[in-house]
Amino acid sequence: MKSISPLNGVHLVGDHGNFKNKNSDEIINIKELKNFKIFQIVKFKKNKKNINDYKLSGLDFPDKLRVSQNNDVRILWIGPNNWLALSAKISLSEEIAKNLSNDEFAITDLSHSKAIIELSGKNAKEVLKKGCPINFNDINKNEVVNSIFNGIAVTIDFINDQPNKIRVMCLRSFGESLYHSVTDASLEFGYKAI
Amino acid sequence: MLYIKCPHCGLRSQNEFAYGGDASVKRPELNKEISDQEWDEFVYLRKSPRGKHLELWHHVSGCRQWIKVLRDTSTHEIFNTYKSEEKVG
Image (cartoon, rainbow over all chains, first blue to last red):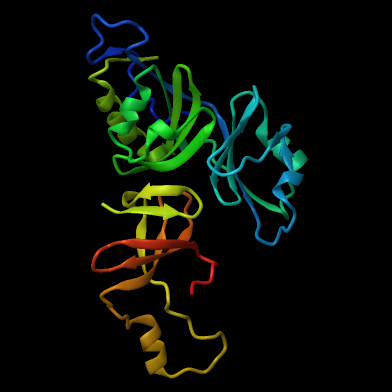
C-alpha cells in the first residue's frame, strides 16, 4: 500500500508570491518533510530512575525546551517527562526497543499522524511571527517550543539559525490548514515550494 | 491579553492556555460516605470572588500540563504560578 503524505494535495512545487527581483536568500523555501519515523516517549511516573541514565541512539534526553541531535536522530522535549524522537534515516522502533523498556516508558508511534513543514531563509522567523505569540528573538538553534500558529497547535523545532531553518509540526488533520496559513504569511517575502 | 508564566515552559501567551476553574476545590475523599448536598457542592457550586483567586489553567497548546495560577480577578494581575502538585500557601 502506498502512503500519501499529509500535504500531498496542497504542496505545489514552484515559486509563489512576491518572489520577483529578489535574491534567493531573501525568499522563503518551504518543504514538506515526509517519511519520518516519529515516536512519542513518555517516562512513567512510577519510573524513579533518573532520565540521564537513559540514552537513545547515543543521545541524552534533552532538558526543557531543548533538542538533542546527531546526524540520524533528533529528540525534542515537548513537556515534562515527554519527548518526541524523529528520524528519517534509521529504524527508530528498533533503537527504542534496544534502549527503552515498555515498563518504564509509554512509547507511541506517531509516524503517520504529523504534518511537517520546513521553512528556511532569513525571513523564516518573520513568517512565524505573524501567527504565533512566541518571542522568536529569544529562540536559538536546537531549541523547541510548543505553541499555536493561527489557532493550530504546533511544535516548532529550530534546526539552524545561520541561516534560519525551522520545522513546524502539527497533527496531520490540521496540516492543510497550517500549510495555507504558513504560505499565506510567506507571500509578502515570496516563497519557493520545494 | 494575559501572559502566564508556565512553570515548565516560561512566559507564554494566554492563547496557549485553557481555563480550568477554581484550584482550591477539593474532591471528597475516596470511599467516604458523603451527603448529596456535599456532592452537589463539590460538583456544581463555586465562589466567584473579586480579588485574589487560585485557578487551574491547562497549557493545552504547550507542555499539556495543568498548572495553578494565583490571579486577581478584578485587575487580572498574576502574582505567581505553580506546578499542579505544588502546595500553595
